[in-house]
Length: 345
Image 1 (cartoon, helix red, strand yellow):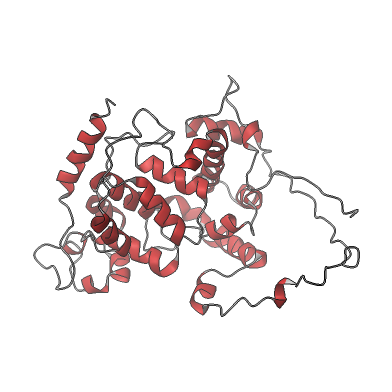
Image 2 (cartoon, rainbow, N blue to C red; image 1 turned 135 degrees about the horizontal axis):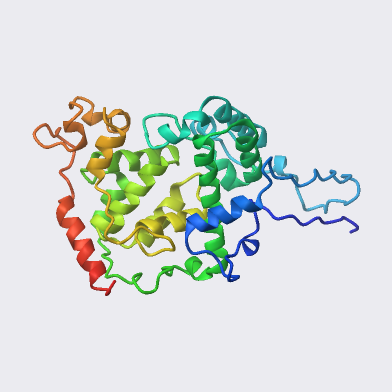
């Protein structure tokens, strides 16, 4: 039809096949990968792809049966979702500007506290492709210096890392663990416990609050994703692929590579994963990162009357209607360790 096509690397800082170790093989550990990729990037920002000229609409005639996007019946838009996640590139750029101007300098300190708006919340725009990861990198590079900007850039590097894992090891796209030596632990498939986890009824407040945040907003704070995934795959020993699928079904920022990489990291089956014996205690984490219980009170109003100590692990003051803990955390940890040891780790 005479329409020129221009091909550019997309959705990553550097194409996966270009980031290799000295032996010409893909990286399996994040830290040397990040060091190598950083060295490949210009110190003052990455050149953006050129703006492509919009083709003359008369150049290619539309077939009679085709309709323009605005002519389709898209149904009613849920105003709640629209207010939480404004659509389009201009909205994403405004959000990026606001983050860089107001919050990026405190990112390293505040990113782990779910009750604080300390993260960029740009992952939905990145996942949808309406915001360039290179634009994010450039803003952090050009506007800010210091550990916080570097910490946020590291999160962008994790995106590239997991996309490289997906590219070089396509078995992860087929439900297989990256680590074949320990990946086939005797996972449990308890549908009742899984449903309790999905619906925020485990009796572990920080886990339940996180799962309710996901159901009501389509998003979950990054540290809570780690805690929820570890709780399911380690304490409950339920197949991590069940949780991976649930997240992808509900996350507005669902990205296969990052989601799969995160779940396999937590389940100790992926590349550069947490050692199998590292099992985060959700109560300890809750006390550390939500000390006053602000996040828990937001999503579990039935616990709002508890004091700051009891709210993390209700025992003597457990309100009527809030379920008891689905499992003893110590027992769950030991069961997970024994299951992994049975794989001759």
